[in-house]
Image (cartoon, rainbow, N blue to C red; front, top):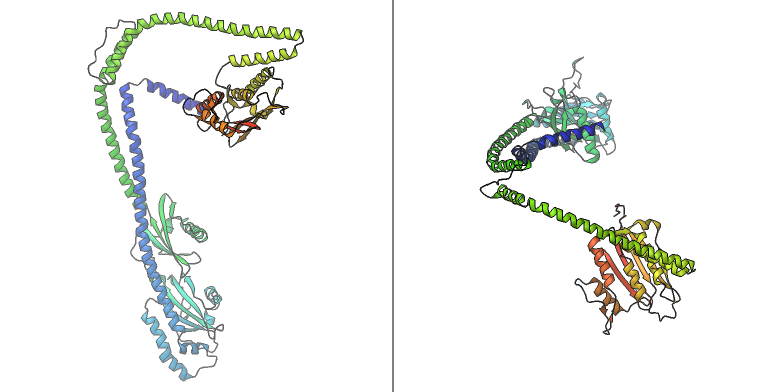
Length: 632
């Protein structure tokens, strides 16, 4: 509350200060605001477009590098798979690995001289392969280093057990180091040389475990750009294994100064696996990065390129500052030009202002001459005309005041006449009650209500309940004329009595039924009924006024429609097909046109009838409460 009051007081203070500024100052400020708005919009749009362009270029450029590196990795995968296939598909190798007996010396010499040399040539022909190893489950196997080993050396390793569970399918495993398998040096610490291993179980025959083939490749050869010696401070590639471990260069890494980056990468990879959505934007320590990734389906990992936006943001800021500077210089230049031009334009306006001040102080007006046209010249001309007509207007004001007094007296006289009629009716009603003429007394009561309703015209709209009470009074008065009285049935819920309707909109319809529904010759009609029913649908109100009179033939109904809905004013009444002119339709037409005038073309009257049975007039109007609340 205090904040709102403070804001209101500040706004009032600003309005007062602004109102005391000169027109020239306010025009200059308006020019600046008018120019500043589009300039700001253009600046914001240009900055966003520039930012999007720089980001899109960075994404496209680094995504291209990422795809090239992925292509290199796929080639290395093909090399490793081909080496493994050549190694375990050799029949001599299979026989040697599955031999359960102690081999003879001659067999060992021949195998080492021929078959082992051929296997070694596989690695020699593919220098990127670090190790090609064959493991055998046979207890009588003689190891031939550095290719053939007993399975017991690595059987306890987790990566080896994971490969066995795949039962002959490829298994890819990533390692932080490359340990010495032969254990030739006691206590040796493995070098931090990350590698990737391809393992595949050897089953001869199918389903019978014989051993395992392993092909190793150092990651610095498997993915060149991830471990490249050429340092790029703006980007860094990562290789992500199926367990979401990150493999990359250790020096000048983005992970050193951003402790939460590794977790952010892991979370986004999990989201991508579950939903397929990838958010490439990331910020930490006030710096922005782009995460660009591509999946490596063959090995179940990802290749990720982390791009620093520091250089891009510097370029964007430099360009933005130049744009803002250009806009500031432009606004200053326009303001100076506008100030000089306004000084010439407003000179005549100042002269006119001084003349008006003299008139306000009571000095005699001697006239003012302003050369040239335009709004200022026209204003001076009208000011002179105004001063010349002031005396005439003063004289006319005195005359009008006299006429106004006379009109007030005439209005008062009319009110006295209306009260005279009301009082006269009340006196006649009292005489009827004294003479015990209850029918006459009731009729006079209804007539008095009708007169008050007609004379009291305070607006076009009334409540539906007031209009219905007027109709009840009308029916009571009209029943004096008829041998068979008319019954008025109301099917109106209490809530609908507060609806807004046009005054005197229902009464002409009821009057039309009273005059035309019954001819007085009907012997079979014991009850003459007019029923008013109100319903609601889709925010609109439907009022149905139905009588059980003689109805209308289709020809007469069509003629009535033509009279009610005609665009131009029709002749009085309408003519049936037999040439006989019947009265009616004018009151319905007036109600229909009033409803369309006040509510719109979609509202109005609809008339339906059946000869010898009934006639119904449907009134459609919006649901509006007289208090002003509207339900649509």
